[in-house]
Length: 543
Image 1: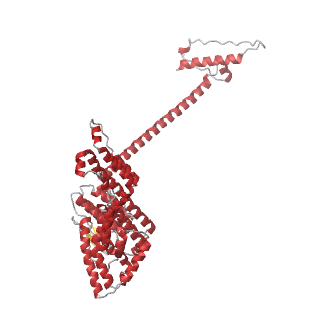
Image 2: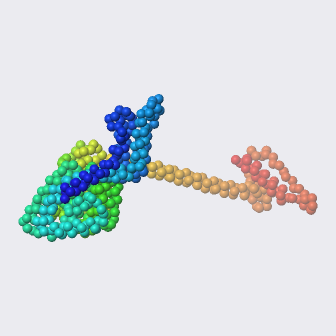
Image 3: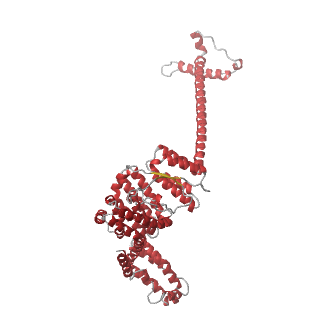
């Protein structure tokens, strides 16, 4: 079966090669001759055609890729030899290439997509020994027909047409028929042989991915069979992006283990997968094969896996890497090929030049306080160790960012993470301290300003009060001073003694006027006015 599929793949590649990006090059001249005759155009071809193919690899529209190719191939000449150069037909080569792209863009896109079949072919080649071993297990354990029926059921349920899914169906269909296997000696021997084959296959995956088997989270719903298979596929399609996808798998496991809403867990997981895929600049078509398969497996086995996660817990042990990241699959857990085999592993961070003893201690505290989210804590710890081994800095900061992504954390867990965060982000902690001191100073200045304003208001009120009292006193004196001398005897009062210095002050005498009509003197008006003038003169002398 494998030879037949490989032959079909080779034929498909040969057929699709009739319309490929090689057709964009001039056909009436060899490439070495083209390089000598039109060096500028030749370099344009060499630079623009790979970009044209990569545009399709990013799953962009044909018309957009054609426009970019046309802009890339454009040559603007302003030298004196431009006319002579055009006589050589160099411009025609670029124009013909752009025209060919516009008229054959869809066919070229299909050819580029067809090249992604090479990844499927390589996946099949790497998994071929495991397929042979599974076929032997099915025969020796009496589940051949049941396995075939389960494969048909999965294809219907997945409701997708995927060459990759069809090629790996046996590894996932075994999940529903393993419990029906016989316990014969030949069956056990075939299972042991399969186990050895899987160790051999995963050794290469661990070496390429540099992610230990125990810290791989994708395919967990199908046990060791699913994890080993997905590691091969990730290695062949997504390369270094696999570690980001793997951490998303840890978050997804934590969501299921805490029994949050399954629909919400699935939607967030798919959203995260597509988000990471969108950031990939090259070979996006190949990596999309991996993402599409993960989504298909979620629809196939998600319900059963969610139910099992409610009561799943396997005690693990502490792990320290010390720069060793290539540990692969080492055997079935409890003899099962498809049961979940994730362990409650606690990562012990290794000391390094970028990691202090306090950071190590604080992370240990996070591991103990965030036990319900052990999958994420372990994944963050692993990525931190990987960062310190392969990167140059920023690893403690990345660790705290990773840990703060824990879902539904307890108060104790959040406190432990906050302590670690404050430790590895000293600039933030210092900034907070400076801000706090500034706030205290601002408060003190505000308090003193308020007290000063209150004091000024108090002084002003007191001054106004005193002024009012003085005015009242003055009004009282005025009521006495304003009484004229002529009335004081009438009221039975003693004349007001005057200052001797005032004896020479001559006051104007306002004589009573007679009314022309009734000949009555205006004695009251003139008398009051005369009295007021005398009062002012007395006050002037006294003060």
